[in-house]
View 1 (cartoon, rainbow, N blue to C red):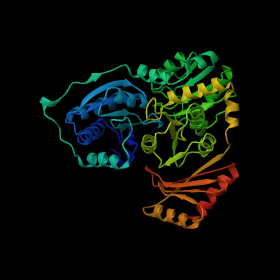
View 2: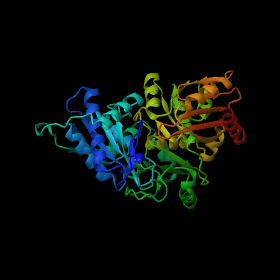
View 3: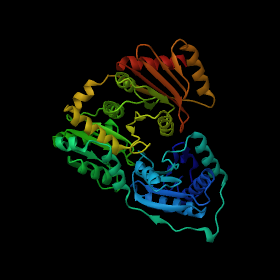
View 4: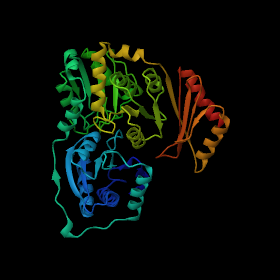
Length: 453
């Protein structure tokens, strides 16, 4: 086994099937998670909901993980192939003590992983994730006796419960009156069935590409511009008003407009926030690497924006504390509290369709109406100790600017430029993200930061 290919982080566990991630590894990690949930919830036999995305290795890893959970005395309910937000919803719906999603998100088919959810459906923050990782490394769990082994239950209601929550909080009639043509690319991932159920309930003319949750991804499954050429072509061929792209576990959403133009994942949260702030007032939350389009949209609505460290758990925690009406991350992840405090492509699709129907504007016009910025991303290899030195150097070099040190360092300039430098959670690199009113200014800011370091 190549342990170098086993990734353990705040995102959970990920590895290469048949290499770093085997059934033995999955069972051991699940036992660590089950023991941690038992201790943290103070329940001898915690109830854990387990779902998986559509990867061919999912059934194998799920069976191994369930065995690991049962072995330490957990009560398990499996829900089959399900989205990550769907698992989170079922944890809440069944009043479970935690959840587990067998997924490697947007990674290629050779990968799989295990993501842990707490009782509130949210992934554990860094300090709690480290406790799970320590238990895994130290085999810090005790197998139970035969008298305490519990049977596995199965529940197949996830998609209906998920869709019902979205429909309850959306203006379904105005979308049905528009009856837009929509192309949905589900990348043969877990989101296909629930996505179709939602869009059919909204009365759209649905063209569903790669719908079957077979896990046989047609391309790299990350919903980026280079991977969505097929969606752009499908939108144009079908004369559709919009194209949606889910990732394999359906917690992210990318969008193509009526001209077949990929508009960028940052716009998913921006458009959704624009609509929600039209409906109701309240705070917004996003991580430090998310576009300042959000700030401009919120400012025009008189709403504050709370910035957090990178990571869904940080955003969700701040949203609960600040009673935010919407939040998320610039990777296409929209968190809408009435549905669940987890990134959710279904809720995002419904909100954006409601925006189109309410305004009567095509998507390209809605995008053109938003503030325009350009983002440039870069990375630098580092060795131990270099990250903190780089942060301190930038803090000194840009001392006269607005500085945020929650997660690495973010520097905001008075001319609406900003740059965020942070060490990666999974690789020995520094990530640099800069945004400015145009591409050249953003690129110059990245170069300026590199020179300063």
